[in-house]
Amino acid sequence: MADDLLQWHDGFHASLQIELQVEAAHLEFYPEHELYKKALRVDTLVIKNSDLPVQKKIGKIFRKHNLIEYKSPDDTLNINDFYKVYGYACLYQSKTKKIHEISMTDVSITFVCSHYPRKMLKILQKERGIEVEHTDKGICKLKNDSIAMQIIIINRLPPEENRWLSSLTKKLPMNRNTEQLLIEYQRHKDSILYQSAMELIMQANKVFLEGEYS
Image (cartoon, rainbow, N blue to C red; front, side):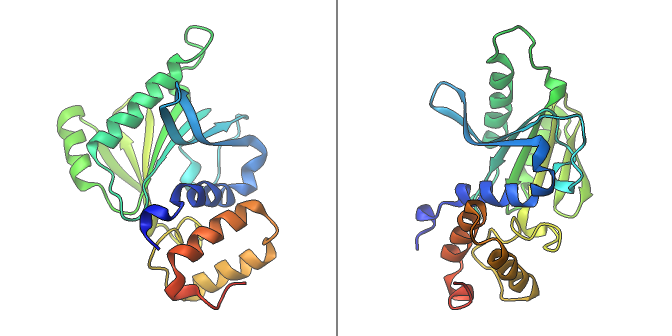
């Protein structure tokens, strides 16, 4: 199936919620959240409605308002994407009833992609003095900016920690992690979230998974 027919963003949104479901009691998820009129939408908005820090590594950076930009496996993260989402964060802050209702210290940006954005990071270092800190496997923190930002590289995430996000690929091998993915799905196959995530994974990896899933 052609990549443009695969609903990568739907699968990502479902997989993200699965990864963070232990802490779902204080996280609210809004897919394709409208930021400013109908044309500007961030891929996922996560509102953290308690002061408790997110324990899972992919969410440790989360503040009260968290904007997430997702790039499908064949897409790359570039400098235009960075400024687009950075602009979204500024528009999100401004779209309130009261002045300074949202502080930028309460906003975070997460970029999720499959390829390390080396060129983008070089430009950010040169133009804005933004440095990169590799905090965990597959997780890079962007430093020296007033907005908390991180990049998640899906194919570098530890599968045992992020089984669903790391499975958002078109080259999923039939290994122990994939077997555990299928087992976990069978335990939750009545869940709309698991159905959405697995449907995307199945469509993208028919060669590897056909006959293993029902």
